[in-house]
Amino acid sequence: MGTAMINKKGKSGVSSLFPPRRKEDSLQDYVQILVQRSKSNFYKGMLDDQLSCLPDHERPRVPVTDEVYHRCVTKSVRVRCTKLVFAYESTEEWGAVFRDNVQKRKAEGGYGSLEATYKEAERLWREHSPAYQRCRSVAMPGILPDGLRNIRRTRRPDETEGEYRRRIRRDVTNCKEQAVRDQQRIEASAILWREVRPAVHDLLEKLSEEGMAVKILQQDDVRREIASHIENYEPPQDPIAATIDLILLEVQRRLFNNNNNEDAS
Image 1 (cartoon, helix red, strand yellow):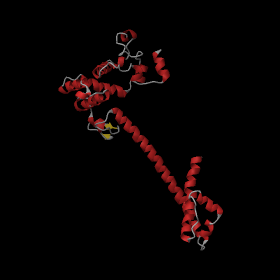
Image 2 (tube, rainbow, N blue to C red):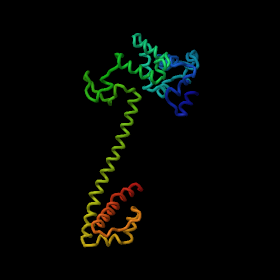
Image 3 (cartoon, rainbow, N blue to C red):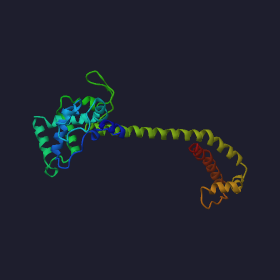
Image 4 (cartoon, one colour):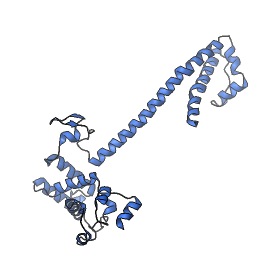
């Protein structure tokens, strides 16, 4: 029943599988719960009678089958909890300091929050764990020292896995947006040289007769068209200024109006 409810609501993640942290639980209490949860592999495969022995605030809402485990216990959660266990159970001096700071309040120099605790555990993992492979975590794609190929993107030394993934998603989004802008510039350039340039050449040839530019600007339809872009427009009497206005009008027609037509389609 519980599994069906989780799937039906489309929820995923550990927060949908386990009860939330109780108000009365200190940071140390909750870290101990997470450590035990990780060491028990999030109680995967345990039967109802086994789960019933756990306190209510630690027990998963439903039996953790393979399907539930795959849906709710993400790799990033498992990785973070593994590093938390490593730091919290270390017998080294830095491990004792870590546990002491978990127990202290923030005003006393403690971590003060679960996220800060996670980040410190990840830092200690990078510095002390023999399982940490710096070359795989921060190296550019290419050949690793052991001869294997590294195809991962670059992860910065001070980034958590979650921060790294969010940055990569932002980078991908930015690249897509830049590609759209580049394509728009290419299309605008093509219109400029394919359509605007010949039109301007034809216009200048047409305006070669003295005073023709001023005469065209006096036409009602031309004045109204320019007035739709310039408030209180008055056609200039100077031939050069009149020619420039007509050139800009042609650019407006060919380039900007073309873009509007594409948007409408």
